[in-house]
Length: 141
Length: 109
Image 1 (cartoon, rainbow over the protein chains, first blue to last red):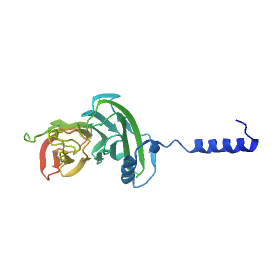
Image 2 (tube, helix red, strand yellow; image 1 turned 90 degrees about the vertical axis):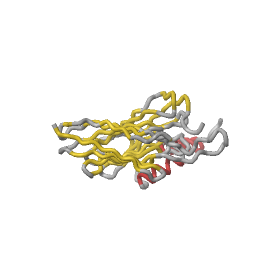
Image 3 (cartoon, rainbow over the protein chains, first blue to last red; image 1 turned 180 degrees about the vertical axis):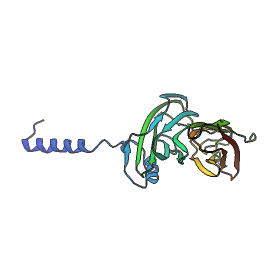
Image 4 (cartoon, each protein chain N blue to C red; image 1 turned 90 degrees about the horizontal axis):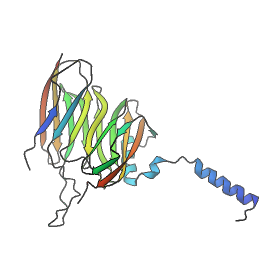
C-alpha cells in the first residue's frame, strides 16, 4: 500500500481518534441491559469498581447460580444478567441498619456477563461485571 | 403447589451494633414466564415472588425488587446490626397479590 504523507497522517490521526474513545464497557452490554442501567441511574455516569461481585466461574446448572455482592457505601445494588431474555435479576435496597452486601441464587440462560450496578449514598453510581460460564441454561426449556 | 412456607435463620441474641447474618428462603416455583408447557407448546404464565422486605421494629432494613431471573425457592442473605432488642419481620409479595409473612424476635446480649 502506497500512501502519500498526507494520507498517512490522516489515517494515523483517525486511528488515534478511535483508540482515544475509551473502550466503553457499555458497548459490550446489550441494549436492554443498557436501558435497565439507564433507568436505574437516571442517565448519570457510572464509574467502575468499588463493588465486589462474587460468582462461580463455571456454573454447571444455570437454574441456580449462587452470587453475592458487596459495595461499601451503597444504598441500592442492581444485578443484571446480560444474556438472559430479560436482563433484570434483582435490586437490593439497604437501610443504615443493613450492611450493603447480599447473596442470592439466580438463573442464567447461558454463558454471559453478570453485572452489578451500585447506587452510593452520595448519589453516584458504580458498576462491575463478571463472566460466568454456564453448562446448562436456566431459562425456558 | 405445595404450601408456601417461609424459612428464616436469625440469631436469637446478638451483640448491639455488631453485624450478624440473616438467611431467608421461601419455597416458590418462581415461574419465569419463559417456560413452555411441553404438551401444549404454550408459554406458562409468569408467577413469581416480586418483592421481599425485612423490617426491624417497623423500620426498613433490607428489601429486594425481584425479577424472574431469581431462582426458584428464592434465597436471600444479608447482614444487619441492631442497637436494641426487637422483632425482625419478613414479607414476601407474590405476583397474584398474596403476601407471605414471618417474624423473629432478637435479643441483645
